[in-house]
Length: 298
Length: 145
Image (cartoon, rainbow over all chains, first blue to last red):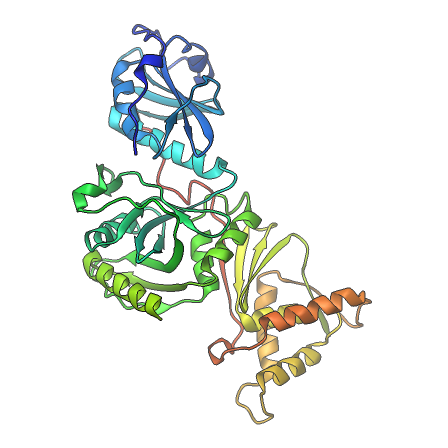
């Protein structure tokens, strides 16, 4: 559930902040911002701050914050971003303590960049949960996990599964706990438009679905890459191959490999996994739900 | 000839009959199927290639006339293991090992015994461990001036 920003606690906006995107480093930008507006929130136990210098940014910010965020009562944060409209009024800049992260003339694009950076920060910084880039739905109290890189068709398949009756958990992260159970990361679905680079966010209710809430054991892991014209011709893969497919999409695979391998081994130890190229998502969705139903009966 | 498995800079996770290995030197991740894992665990500095072949032949119940030759399987497995830098070296004389290591090896053998016919050939799958940005949606939004 996305909360509304606690506007009553924000500092006063300083509308004529003189920041030139060409000459001022990000550190100077951050230092110059304490009187601008901002928000401090908690997500997965991390305290994150975002400073802005324009009301339009603040108004739209809440749509791009992580699912389940809560306002932080303290201004002290673990991570600080600044998102500013440059003095020329034409460019938006996103920065953190390390430097500039993105720059664009469009507000929605800079907010998407913030969203993506927040996801990576959370996915690599939370210590007791493992974040795997994957789509997740629930079906008969088991999770179907679809690991895959961007543009592999995860969101389309997740949307098709939801339309077919599955419970929505995520189109971005499978969040595993130490027992190998999958938790929801219930942000709105991010559906790419025909051109590929534009994204439309879609609440799951628009698909006739609902958000899952309780942690689920993994019932099926699906390695399915979209290929136009492909037939769904799945083959079973071993638990080890399934674990590799998950690790290949794990944010901390390189930095915390033992942690990742241990959790994923638990998650896949009593599950099934299959792989195939896929064509139309709607047909595959029905096949997957049928497959999991049969497996859970067995 | 006595093969010795590499143990340095490796993280190992057992998963049923398979073994997942993380190579910290290369940031590579390997999935050894049951046969590759069995041969790897036998590379303890005590067994010659012929010894490992005999162990496999017994466990796989291969007859002398079987089409699949256990020595060929071991050679194939060792080649695979070498190509993924999982063999440290070959020696001519067995190394002295504390008994505890031998017991551990036997325990490992029990863990990965019981081959299915589908895993009769040694295979190792591998990936390069992804960087965080690779395992996430795109982040960069910077326009050219």
